Amino acid sequence: MKRIAKFHTVSEGQFTEGMKDCFPAMTDDEIRQCYASLKLPKRATSGSAGYDFYTPVDIVLKPGETIKIPTGIRAWMEDEYVLKLYPRSGLGFKYRLQLNNSVGIIDSDYFHSDNEGHIFCKITNDSNEGKTVEIPAGTGFVQGIFIEYGITIDDDADGVRNGGFGSTTK
Image 1 (cartoon, rainbow, N blue to C red):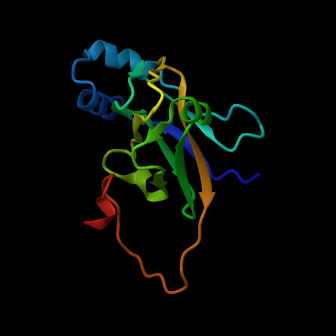
Image 2 (image 1 turned 60 degrees about the horizontal axis):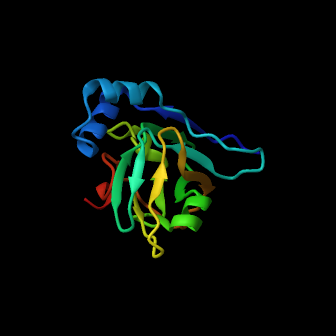
């Protein structure tokens, strides 16, 4: 098995900025406690492809509700890899929990962005059965899988990333 990546937490300042944006009612003390309890993504078993990402806060989503979650995590990976994020299988199956962008794509150069490569996940409870999903803080809610990719023979991309969503098309 190739070892091609490493997870890190973002700085406390970067995490605080993300939390204040997503959860403006949280106090600085509550945010510090969340930061102190961050867990790096892990695989559950030696045969698991996905690394579980853990929510830093309790999540309660009624059908149709959406929430944006700062994970506090960044991922360094070798250049020819991408990290793809998906809902954890059980949550998707039981509640139709969905990532709003279907599949999160974390490029290798995102790690060096001004926001430290802070990974956010925006999820929606798309239940058509009226089920409310409750995910306690510290529980896995999405999974990330590292995938090797190739480029075309005539590729000449030379841009430099600085930012997250939509930054590569500016």
